[in-house]
Length: 159
Image (cartoon, rainbow, N blue to C red; front, side, top):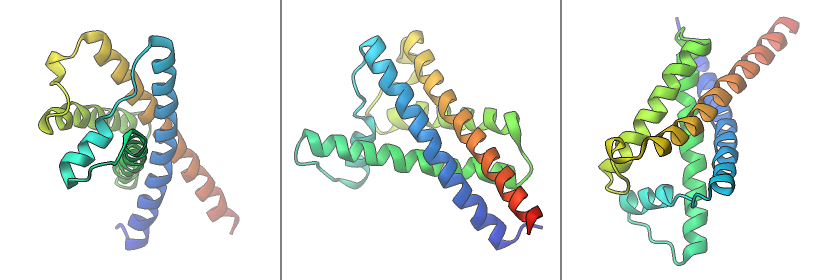
């Protein structure tokens, strides 16, 4: 039986692991931008602008809004990954499901908000690059979550 404290702990662990995954995907995206000459995505800021009607005053403010949105969104996606662990789906299986959820959400959300094309309209190379970024996120999030759980278990046993 899951207790409220277990749920709160999972949420906290998920936020930390999701934040770490967001750092990893950000590094992956920055590397791709430099190596492949890709432009920085404005999708996070564009989504917030559409959803809550906020309008940044200039490009610098739009970049900051985009980065803040990116990190909050990524940290938040760590929560379902941690809940999988709490309810028994663990390891690489959970990471695979998590990857599918994140990749699927990206493919559905941007076209639904009319700020990006449907996945069927994106060149396969770009879809592949996006999938690599999301895999970096999901794997990092899973590994950090496992490390947090191992440390928590060691501390529990030492007490």
